[in-house]
Length: 537
Image 1 (cartoon, rainbow, N blue to C red):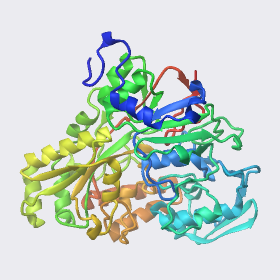
Image 2: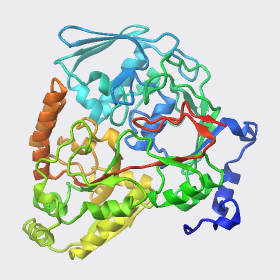
Image 3: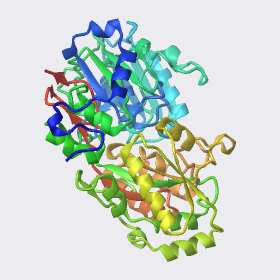
Image 4: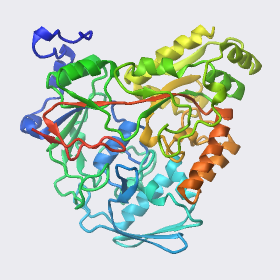
C-alpha cells in the first residue's frame, strides 16, 4: 500500500518532508544537541497544548500535559478507580462528611519549595471555582482548611460518594496542585512558565507555539513505592527529556515515525495504521476505553435552540457512515446509542429506538415545525484531528443530501476549540450551528466527567451551552447516588430524558490508537497517555 505523501517501499527509509527538516532546523539548539539521543523521547502529540493552567485546560491534550507537570491528591488506576497519589493517609468520619488528608513527606515543586497544605487548599479552591466538574464538589463543600503544613480537612454538607474520584482528576480540567501564589493569581494573568510537582518539568525557554513543547525529568520527584498502574502508582521517568513536535499533517507524521524521526505518535490517523504496521511500528489503543463520536449543536441560536430541530438532527445521520469514515477496516469500531460508553459500567440504550435509523422526511418535517426555512448552517470543523476531519465531511454530505445548505468552516483546532466554547454571541458564540467531535471513553463514560451532559443554565457548562433544568436534576440524582447500583438505575432515567432533549447526537465509538517504534518498552494503558515508565533502547 502506497500512502500519498509517503515514500515507495524501494526508496529505503520513508521520506521526511522538507517541512519537517525546516522545522527541526528552526527549533534546534545547543542545549538540545548536548542531550544524548537515547535519553530523549520524541513524541508527535494529537494537538498543541494551549492552556498551561491545569485547572483551566479542558481538552485531552491539556489533561496529558497536566498529568506530566502536576500531581493530584489521588490518581486513577487501570480500573478507573482512585488511588492515593500525593496522599499518605486518608481518614473519613463515620457520617461520611469529614475527610482528613495527610500529604506524603518530601513532596517538592520544581523550584525546590515544599508542597504544603496551603497549596492544596488554594489549588482546590481555584479548580472548584472555575470548572464544571469542580463546581459539583464545591456545591457540596462546607469547609476546606489547612490544619498544618501537611494536613487538609474537607467537610461536606451532605455525603457524596465521588470525592476521591473527583480529586483523582476524573474529567477536565483536573484538580492539579500548584503553588499557593499561582493558584491565587488573578484569572486575567496567564500561566506561561508553570511550576508543578509532577514527574516532568515544563521547559518554557524551548516552547515554540504551534510547533514544540519540551519536558525534562524532575530529578527530585517523590516516586510512590507501588508499581505503575494506569495513572496511579510509581511514576518513574526513564528518559531525560520528552519532546513534543506538533505535526498537523498525518502523512508527514507517519513519515516521521516510520523513518525514526519520532518514537511515539499519540492518536494516529486510522487510515495510516496498515502502513505503519508494515513498517514494524506497534499500533494499539492505550486509552482504557474506546473513544466516542458525536455531533454537538449550538443551543444558543436557531434552529437548534428548538428541541424539534435537534430531534431532526438525530434523524439525519447513520452511525455506520461516521464510523466507516473514521475507522473503516483499520480500527475496531461499533455503533452505540447511549450517552455513555457501550461496554462501560453505565451502558444502556434505553430511549434510543426512534433514532436508530435515519428518517429524512420526518427530519424535514421537524425542522419545518421548528421554524427552519432553509438558512445555511455553519458546520465547524478542523483538519488537524483526523476523526473530526472525517466526521465533518460525512456530516456535511448528509446535510446536503437532506437539502440543507451547509458552510463547512474548517479551522485549526485551537481556533475551533476557542470558538465552540465561547458563550458570548457577540464574540463568536453564535458563528456556528454544529460541530463533530470525539472524546476518549475513559473521560466520557460518567455524567460527572461527560461535560456535554452538564445541562445547567448559567453558561458555565460546555460548548453549545444547553439549558435544561429537568435534565440537570436527573444528572444530579446520578451524581448523588449512594452506590453503583443506584447510580446505574438513575442513569437509565437520565438517558431516557436525554433522548428527548438531545444534548448531542451519538455517532458511534471506535478505538483511537497510538503508534510507537520497537525501541520503546513500558508503554502504559491509562485514563490518558502517560509518558513515564517508558524506556527507549
